[in-house]
Length: 121
Image (cartoon, rainbow, N blue to C red; front, side):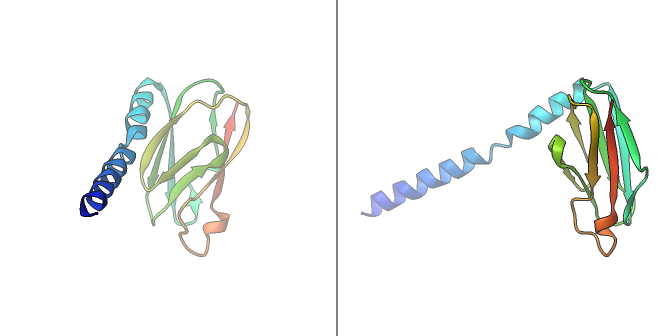
């Protein structure tokens, strides 16, 4: 019985390690090297540095996010972007339109009004 329980524990541990492989980071780094264009977005308390950011449809772009004041994150749910703290995410928006940019970390009383727009032309 002890061997059976030990075997289950070892298999569970191996499965847990395999699930934590971190494969997404390497693919994001590779795609970041392919993007020639970048959009810098800076956050301060309760606002982004611009109300609108513009990119072209079908072109890879690095979204480079930094918090200059306070603790903030950036999310564009429709484009599967979620950066918590400073960071970069490479995307290729295919559909023209306007996409809401929001802070992804509850940052205080002005959090709900912390919005901007990504315009894809």
